[in-house]
Length: 150
Image (cartoon, rainbow, N blue to C red; front, side, top):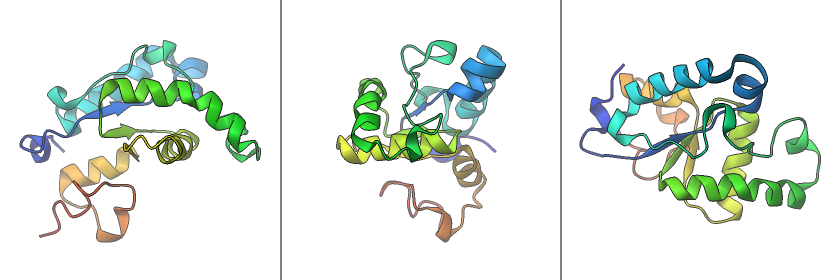
């Protein structure tokens, strides 16, 4: 696992700090661990941290059952803060370790026409190892959807 695949592409990534994992349980230590892995798989120079971040990062608005609540417009309005925070990074991709965060942030990008893509760690780990299958690329953008499929 390394970041060589992204040296020439220079695709920028940011990272969502999930509330349950970081703020409510393991704190900044877990946030630092996620950053370590992120930098190893995309390249330190291609990682743009959100501000604020780690234990002070903003909630995406999808957790605690809100994603499934049926209150779509309220959830999106609350999530606008997260969307604006992501847009300020200029990153093309958001790594979302939590499934609720992944779904919420994907919806925010679609709804507010952010143009950023949302991926799980495992997608990038497999991509960096050259083992990401054709059927596992649904959340990648056009810049990566066929990368490594020679």
